[in-house]
Length: 319
Image 1 (cartoon, rainbow, N blue to C red):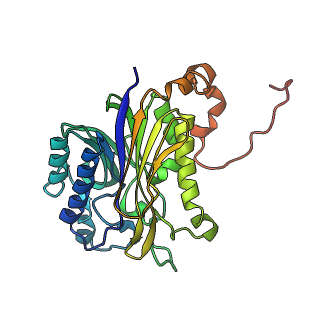
Image 2: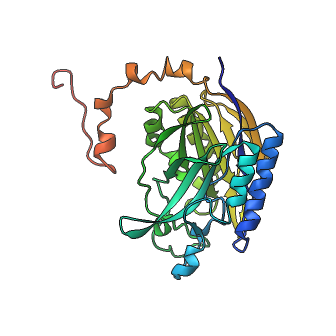
């Protein structure tokens, strides 16, 4: 019997640096209300959904920086979202900046949680692949300082039970790394939730900037197809504090096909009814990992962090 669910990507338009948490949460609640009206039972919000994309700025004052982070959720600011979701019977994925005390020190992560329809946090993920720099770069109108304000996630790529299936999470730049999807694929993931904030003017190469939309879809479609999983990508879009952000939120099938996509750069809900069993034929044929994978041939992936010497081709007599 098909496991059909109606899900949504809740795209956000720009969030001003001066916009209050209460104002942002009200926007999230409005999207949630629309999701309920359209029959959705799960909503994916973007990366860093509660604030502007603050890594574009240089902050020297610790107190000024800390205002962008959350401790445990739901705190007083986000409580209305949790309450509205619980009343509507809708689960959600939410990206935020996390400040936590661990191992005797303060740590900061770019984090996402998945919350079930009863308001319980059932999954937590911390972004592993942090883009950008740790120090400001000269000559840039906008910085990209995720390596300054966050440390790489320490929770791996967990898969957990939710929405009647197996769910996983990624955040923004993670989508460009096939290893991230494959680790979840090896846990039989069926739905990957992915929030992103992608500036179109932060790369040093214009030829890369103009292909941002193409690369965004390409990476998510490849991850979906090669691991036979649904992917829901939710963006922050529009011109935020002068910086243009890619929108193009979308829902992608295990076939790699985009089944629904945003058409604006503003707050917009993208809905689709998905079948969590759709990936099964792919997992039984092309991507039957147990039958076809050869892990010994891939050892370089985990043995090296960056490029190194070529291994060289071996002849049959040398092998």
